[in-house]
Amino acid sequence: MDIATMLGLVAGIVLIAASLFMGGDPMSYWDAPAFLIIGGGVCAATMIHYKLSDVMIIFSALGRAFTIDIAPAENVIRDMVEYARIARRDGVLALEERMRNCRDKFLAKGLQLVIDGTEADMIREVMLIELNTLQRRSKRGMEILLYMAEAAPGFGMVATLIGLVQMLKQLSDPSQIGAGMATALLGTFYGALAANLFFLPLAGKLQTRGKEEEIVRLMMIEGFRGVQSGVNPSVIEDRLLSYLTPARREGAK
Image (cartoon, rainbow, N blue to C red; front, side):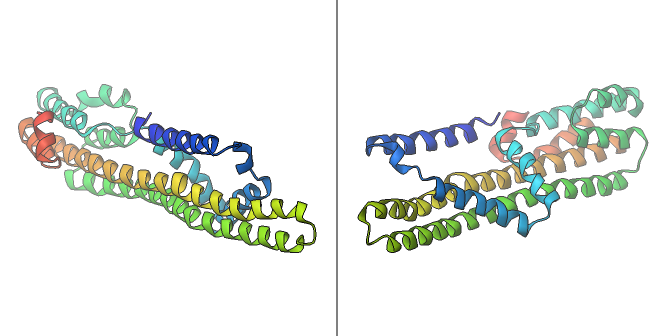
């Protein structure tokens, strides 16, 4: 579980809810028509804009925003050095047990290529293709969230316009003006809140997670090549450490 994402989301909701309670009756900020216009409008526009198979990616993308499913770079360095030592001492076939116990499909596939005796350059080519596939899925999820962030304020404006029309039509009956004004104002509020507290931050989290994953996967690919080529484990360690900032290199040794 990504603590930062959960803390940020919970803190945002709690602080906004607290401000609503401090301002009086919190139920006065609830308007079902405005909520349906924005929620239904954003969902409908997203399904129109993207294929259904792409829209379904959003669920796995959101899961990645709330969980940490990538091994830390320091652990990758440690594991790759260990694989190199095993391969030099007992041969690459000795890595089969490690491969079977590996939960990371990307790592398991790389180890399988090493065990099969695939040439180092071919390993790099195959694994880069695999990495590009993973990145495309991550980027598509981020694109969908960014589109939803753009659509939410727009549908908030739609709710505002609908509320204003309802208000103007009821000028002769002052008791009905409040409902139209509430839909008008709360539509803008809901749209801005959805875009700035949910969609944009989650899209940014996916972008950050994608960059982190790219570095870790490139380190794995470099490690696979080194193991297959019989490079000295200390040399592999030095190569992989070069992917980290100077501050993190000291902690990884």
